[in-house]
Structures are given as C-alpha cells and as structure tokens.
Image (tube, rainbow, N blue to C red; front, top):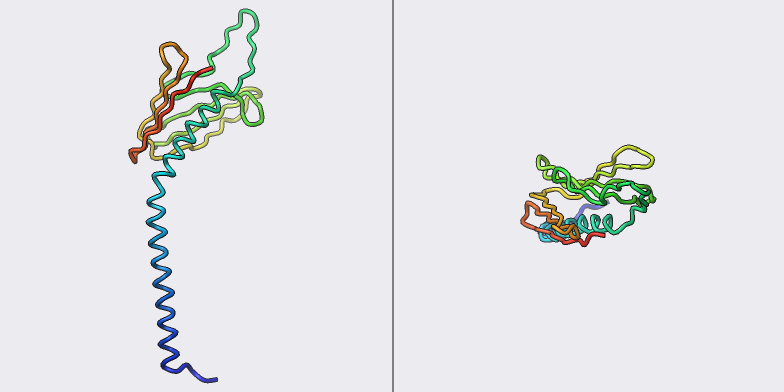
Length: 162
C-alpha cells in the first residue's frame, strides 16, 4: 500500500475546504431565509386563529329551545375571553374558550365538552402575543376581534354573527 503524494494531499485538502465553505455558506443562507420567513409564519398563524374562530361561529349548535326555555347566547365575552358554543370535529357539543394569558403572552383554545361532560383540553394557538381585543357591536350582529403580536403584526377581523 502506498501513501498519498504531496499533490494528491493538496488536492484532497482543497476539495475538503471547498465542501466546508459551501456547507457554511448554505447554513448562513438557510438561517437568513428562516429569519425572513418568520414574520410571514406568525402572520399566517394569527389569521389561522381568526379562521378557527370564524369556523366555530358558523357551525350550528343544533340546540332547539323548548317553550319558555332560555338558551344561552352562542358567544360571550367573559373576563376578556371569547366563549363560543359550537360542535367539535366529532359532532359533540362543546364550549370553545379563546383565552389570552398576559403573563405568558399566549393565546390558547380551551375545549370544554358539554355532553357528555369530560376533561378540558387546552391547545396553544399563538405565542408572543401582545394583546387580544374582542367586542360585540351595539346591535349584537357583529364581533370585532384584533390580535396584536409582539413583532408588530396585527390581525383583525369583523365577524357577522348568526
């Protein structure tokens, strides 16, 4: 077995240096691309949260009032949290509470099964949230919701209530 000549060794080192340089350049480029995409990802997540709320508002609750029975409104704003009576993916009656926790800057969905009663499930929708503002119009026909993120992104939507 023979060893590498000086020329072969220099060529191998040059090839290795080229490969390492290309890998480092690609890593820097991927990092810059990731940083550039982050605001779009956060904005998309905020709009997805608003779409989830809209989906809950348009889904039927299928609760028929008996004569003289008073039915709770489909939506309420309690302690700054939006509460929606709706149906889960499997058709069960649930209450969805959309909650903003100022201490952790998180906007979460808490699903509370009604029939049959069960365990509440919490799911994080957004982090880095600065504020969430919800308000029902004087007529009760519209819901305005605004989500502001720490990054300066603001997502807002006006929902027409059923």
